[in-house]
Image (cartoon, rainbow, N blue to C red; front, side):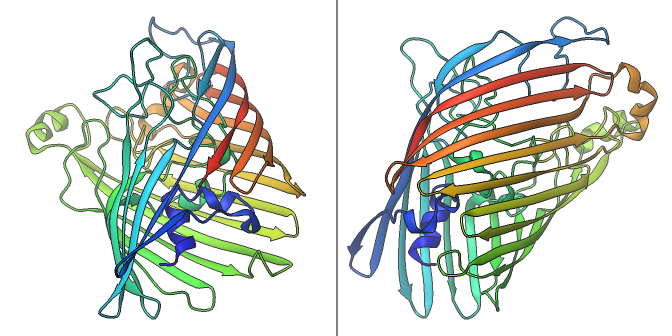
Amino acid sequence: MNKRTRLVVAVSTAMWMIPMTDAVAGIDVAAGDWKIDFSGNVNGFYTGSSCANPSTPVPVSSGTAPVAGGLACTGDSSASLRNGLLPAALVFSATTRQSDFDIDVTIGFYPGINSDLGGGAVNGTGNPSALQSPGIDARQVYFTFGDASWGTVKIGRDIGLFAKDAILDDMTLLGVGTAGGNPAPSNTSLGRIGLGYIYTDWEPQITYTTASFNGFSASAGVFQPLDDGAYVSHNSPQFQAGVSYTVGDPKTSPVSGKIWVDVVTQRLKLNSSDVALANANGVSASFSGTGFDGGVKVDAAGFEGVLYGYAGKGVGTTGLYILATSASGDTRKSDGGYVQATYKFDRLKVGVSYGISDLKLADDEKAFESSSTLLKRNESGVVGLYYSLTKSVTLVGEYIDTQAIAWGGNETREKDYALGGILFF
């Protein structure tokens, strides 16, 4: 794995969003047979969110969100100083060549500038109170071994395969996108997560990636299976795989691009102690969730275009296996995608994107469609300006319009703006 590849992985692969001529290379140190690399980023944004009063044509009980699973805010408008879609990062990588194997070990620490509640996910609800501190998200802990002639094996915790390219090519990776929880911000925003793609996530895995054959490469692996509500029993792993084809080099070719396809599948079950009660109440004891995605990216001179889409059954929305079934365990279908175009004028890149994430009612929920507060669609449009002040520093300005719609007709709307910057080293 070469230095550029290590750096791309190490900072959530955000370097894909920076023109190749401006990419920074991290800090390298030689130590015996090992080459050590330190890399990362720091970012911060002033973000304002305006929450439109939700329409509620369907009666909503006290304390229930107008759109269950909606990503547009429903409370008061807010202002914050926060991290963007990327938290900050400090990533350590060490590489060597031993016994005809290329070996890499990577450990990534992802702190942020926002205080969190502690005791839970460090990227959960923030805690903007006095005498607080941010948490550290150790989302990368893995090693690889392989050779350019046959490929690479990865063991540990790292970014997944399904929907990986969707977030790597999202222009809001350098900014904020939909803010999410802006009154008490966490150390990441939503970007376009749940608004055009399902979050790829960082998962324990054993994966194999082939060598590149005339631009073609493939990856496949077993992953830690995920829970969904009461479905917490697993006797088989989650499986993910992907195939891609790249053509041209953005540094030397007038036209270059990439095409990719991915799949994720997993079986989820109730604990054996819950099966009898579930059967008595008409609840499914298990279900399988499978999703597919694919996309096309084209670079031509200063223009870059991305077209992405996904579809699945029993995989949910926003995150893998979130809202994947009805209360009885009947699977819901979901689909979505986004289209994006950017153009770089010297140091300034201008971008626009639009995306949707739809969630269908399960068969046993369709009779109650008119009164359902379940999410039908999350959608957003983004306009962004990204100015390369130096090869390490990018200044960012974004405007984001986000809407959530429920099957029963409820709607919420959020309008965000973000001003700030990000530094990579």
